[in-house]
Amino acid sequence: MANLTSKELSALEDQIKSEQVLVKKYRAMACLCSDMTTKTSFDSYADKHQQHCDTLMGFLQ
Image 1 (spheres, rainbow, N blue to C red):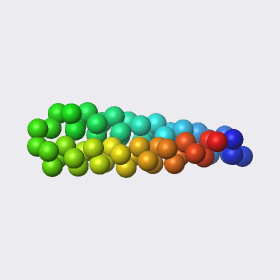
Image 2 (image 1 turned 180 degrees about the horizontal axis):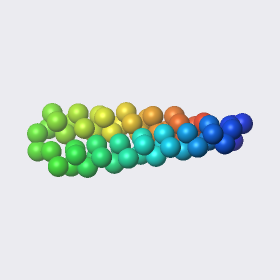
Image 3 (image 1 turned 60 degrees about the horizontal axis):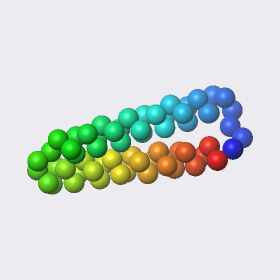
Image 4 (image 1 turned 180 degrees about the vertical axis):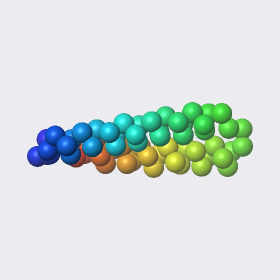
């Protein structure tokens, strides 16, 4: 694990949780869409936020 202060670790955890919430929301919205263009957009947003989450998780290793 990287040498993070408790404040940095707390902020990182908060940001990871926020990104995870966004991924879940965008995936849920994509499931509700019947318009493929809109569905694709929501899936793309979810993918981007999942990448953010994965990047942030990398700081914990």
